[in-house]
Amino acid sequence: MTTSALFVRMVAEMRLEPGGLLEPVPGAPWRTEAARGEAGVERRLAALADAPTAKIVAFASDHGPLGLGVTSATQVPDSVIAVAAVAYGQNMVDAVGAARVWLEEGADPPFPGIALDALTLGSALRRTPDNIRAAFGALMDGQHESVALAAAAQGRFDPARFLSEVLPNVTIHPRQGPLRTDERDALSAGLDYLEWLGGIIGGIDDVPAPLAEMGGSPGLIRQAEMLPAGFIRSAPGASSGHLQAFEVSMIMSEPMDAWRQFALFARGCLAAASLANRAIFGSLLSTPQRDQLASLCVTLFGIVPPDRLAASDLANRVRAIGLAWLERELEARCAWPVRRGSMHGLYVRATIGLRSHFADEGLVMACETTGCTGRFRLTRNRRYCDRCRDARRAADVRRVRERDGRRVGLVRERAPLRNRRTALAAS
Image (cartoon, rainbow, N blue to C red; front, side, top):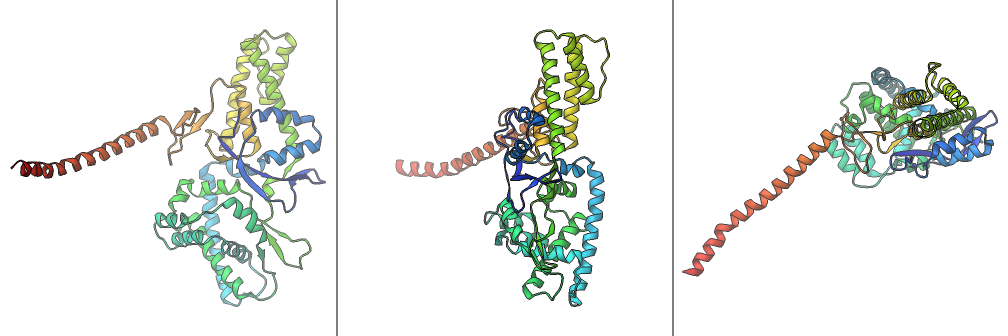
């Protein structure tokens, strides 16, 4: 199964840290791209269970991280995230207010943490294209979303390129010494943006339509956790207290053991699916093969099947258990039903590949209509559930009829003029 038309992946050159952590090479740029070349990726991943470390590192550099570092926001309900988001947004507004007081009183060291964040954000936003700044400004001024979207459409903006190329070059002012005029301006702009975002997330201000379409604050947090997070580290060779912002995300760093464990799990799933499918669709299983299938069911999914089941009955149960277990994993990571163009780590993409070995039917897709919870089975180029597809077709028919009606009306208006001309010519 290929995921190239369905998912986006995040990729960077990886290395193995002496402590056993697989992490991006320091200073390496990251990129987002369509997950191409992943037909049968679950089989290639399973083959890494006993592979040399260098081969796993190369594989991770080509296909991106497993994505296990983003489970905190995807495994809890939206209601729980919403409560935390509201509290976080309100605390952000309070912190911005304290930073403004600090700035008005002379901005003497030490810097409040929110001031450092705002200075970094303000410096970064000053590097964005004019149309993006205009769009943010329109939203912050309370103008309609259409005004902001129109402003953003006046030019092109690649968020991935901005984050990977601009942000690594954004530096934060040392913790000591007065602020320069340009830094004071950047800090003021950053505080404005943070206050606006905090008010939206904290439920103080109205939620713009683009954020509402993402699922509100919970959706924003889920999206943010799928991007390389900006964080601050001491820059090598820099003067004391001077910081460099936004290195490659820590969420791309994972233990090598996690890769080997998932590879072993994938190998076990493929073996279980092979035995089960052979028992159902092919030849009979020998007693050792039947016992192996029962053992795999316990090891992989934690379910102990009855001892005296026939091989075919056991195979049907293992297929059903495996399918349910894998779909539950995908749903826990907000990857089920599948959404086209969503960004997921290799763990999700390989799990979808493993699912295909247990399932008779294709993937369940999420309807792309905003706010719709409809689902449908994957077919070529289909993007909407039955209800939304019928509604769109009906809207297309109405549009055509209205257009044709306007044409008929125009013809009828011109007809009397032609008749008068004919009558005059006849007379």
